[in-house]
Image (cartoon, rainbow, N blue to C red):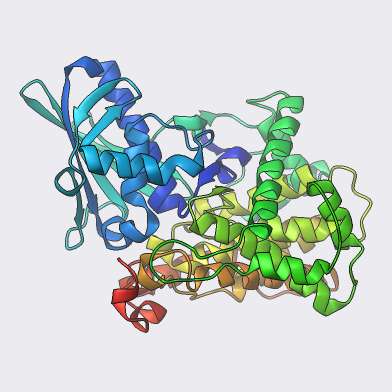
Length: 484
């Protein structure tokens, strides 16, 4: 049985600012509480201590890791929780030094004492490690997790006297099932495309139908897109300063207002219609793509609801390119939204299996680079490109992100992260146009080769450029401006 990664594993509804530093720890906390409740009963729980290691410790405060863990311990669902209440909820815990575990059991919890950032310590399996030390009666039990990128988490357990790292089953992240078109690399994916004559989106859909009815797949994809679109819209209509101490001003609000001039609208559909009526010039379209990407990641930076694509830090690229396609690209694809997401997920899966989607492992090439490759491939297929051109677009997009470092100033997903989403989106569109005008059989670099190169680059990259805020731009801003 092969490990199957679903389209809904790549695209998960989440809360900002980071899939690896916020969503992953959040889900780990939920999983830990579920295990304690199942094994002992929450009524026997006396205390919980949380230890954060490696990258989670170094940039955890800027990424809201402590807040995410507390929300998870409380049993809040990142998909449905009221994001407007997160800050006040956490403030209440800090003031009263109490936390309600799984909305049921009230225990003492001192944020300063019981949640520790161990910046000088590292667990061996992955840079994003965390442990929950749970007291049941007079006994202590340790649960160890790793947030491996994109909201995926693994639990460290002992089985048959061996230490193994087991993917959790929260939200059905990974299932061991047989699918009709199993693929681990782009050659295998292309094999199925050639054998069946199906585009990549249909290959992914057929695999998805092994665990969901086709109508369920369609409805779930629509929900993903509606969440993305709502995020863009809210980001374009929210002004002010981002939290965290860097005093970064939101820009999507002003840009949206400037581009629309005096246009009037009352909802998302009217807003999109108004955008369509603006200039079709290259510079105007470029501004809109940037605006869409900025909007998403400004929402992400302020603990808003986003969709991992494949991560929170890179959440703006795929929706920005998809909205560009809906508003400005000429195509006749009636199922363009769902097909776009299905194809994009296939590319994300290839990178997750062949390299990484964790900036703590591979730098920002693993996030913005992968998201750009995903968007480029999806756009190429939507615009009529064949399977080879689709994969070529993904290769082009990643090739020009190789070596991109992750160097968040102050440990916050703001500088340079927000602007990098605009760059990733524009590169994706350019890569798609290049692929559509090219003959893939003449290309010297394949998608598999660029994935391997990305992984080798990740292995060679200095740890200070892997989401530690210890290198690059992170060292150029006075540390007093933000708390790492």
